[in-house]
Length: 291
Image 1 (cartoon, helix red, strand yellow):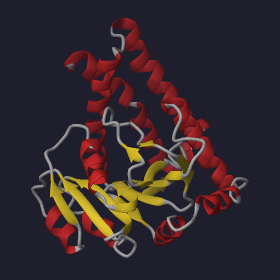
Image 2 (cartoon, helix red, strand yellow; image 1 turned 60 degrees about the vertical axis):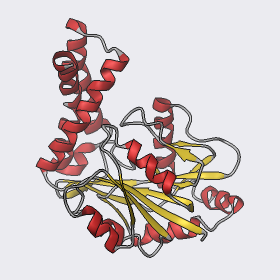
Image 3 (cartoon, one colour; image 1 turned 180 degrees about the vertical axis):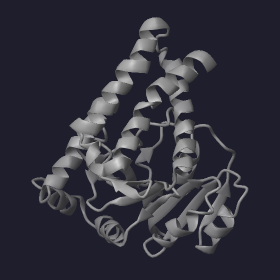
Image 4 (cartoon, one colour; image 1 turned 135 degrees about the horizontal axis):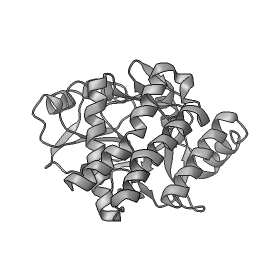
């Protein structure tokens, strides 16, 4: 059987999220693949209720190993990769359904018609920043093999639109066999062998409904950043401490709060910028004294 669109997820103990996530995509998915890292709750049971094919897999410190396995198991011509705490809106679902049925020429025309819009210019600026950090994304020629989706992040009761948080573009819609995760870093971008475009409608990210949940996730990522510091051999001593305990956090807090107008997101924006800045000294401390 030939599938047009596969929806894939990697999960672990996501019973509170998985149902709403799959409910939002069940009408556009030809198949749903869930790679579960031996959840102890009802994640797998709920996923199967929505027709998902569930495959169990050992837990990995870098979650991308399980995400890659989900990509490999998918049979669709196109694959939509999601996290359980993300929600595809009706407008995004319609856009996905439309884009995967267009030719490359039609996609070109569609994207060029949006180049002059303020929103699309923001997307392209975001992509440029990612490429400055990670290197070229995709290829300049050939067929379309992947699409960024802008993401709205929910933080303590509000979707953040400033502070450099939006559009938080993530490549989630890819062609089968044309994308893979390097599985080297938690921050890595999926690698796409082909041209990359942007979808217009937002993907909702409901990661931080409570401060407790945010701190738990934040601590996990700080552990991974601390490990990366060991690989990159970040300098220790007085100069390293000065850089990571003072320079970097103060610069980041001011940059996101004022230059990127995080203050327009209200107290949530201030709190987010503050704790985002704290990742520098916290990761450096764990790297230096616990590594």
